[in-house]
Length: 198
Ligand code: AMP
Image: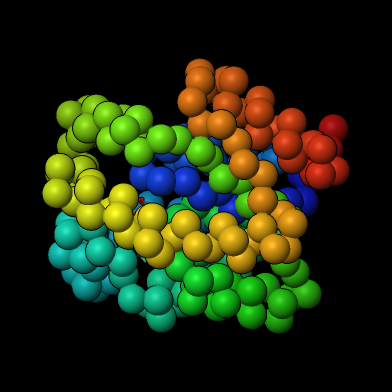
C-alpha cells in the first residue's frame, strides 16, 4: 500500500539529497520530482526546453522561476503524484516557495515535511569533486560547483526559515553511511506521524 506524504528534500549540492530522496520516495511509494533531473533529461534528449537551459545549467545559474514553476506544475498534475511526492531541487528560492504554496493550496494540499540534509561546505565540495570524476556532469567543474554553493547559501538556505516558521523542517545530520542517514530521515518522518503503510 502507498502512504501519502508530500515531502521536500533540501541540502547543498553534494549533500546526498538526490540519493536519499530516491530512497525515501521508494520507502513511501511516491515519485521523486527532481527539477535537475528533468532539465538534464531534456538536455540529453535535445528538446526545445533542453536547448533553452543547457547554458544556464553549465554555468550553475538558476533557470527562470516561471519556466521551472511550469515544469513542476505539469509534473505534479500527473496521476502518480496525486497521493504524494518528494520534491528534490524545487523550490530553490523564496519566490518559488510562494508559487508552490499557491499551487498546492489550489489542490487543498500543503507540504507535510521538509527534510534538510546538513553537510559542511568542505564535505560537499569533496563529494562533488568525486562525483565530477565518477559521473562527468558538465556542471561539476570547480567554478560551477563554487557558484552553485554560493547560490545555495544566498537563495536556497532562506527557504528553510520560511518552512521552519511552519514547523515542518526536520534537520538531519547528512554525514554518515547511506543507511544511517536514511534511518535518521525515516525516524524523523515517523515522529511526525508520516509512516509507511503496510
Ligand atoms: P540539481 O540537480 O538539483 O543540482 O540541479 C541542477 C541545475 O538545474 C541547477 O544548477 C539549476 O541550473 C537547475 N535547476 C534545478 N532546479 C531548479 C530550480 N528549482 N530553479 C531553477 N533552476 C533549477
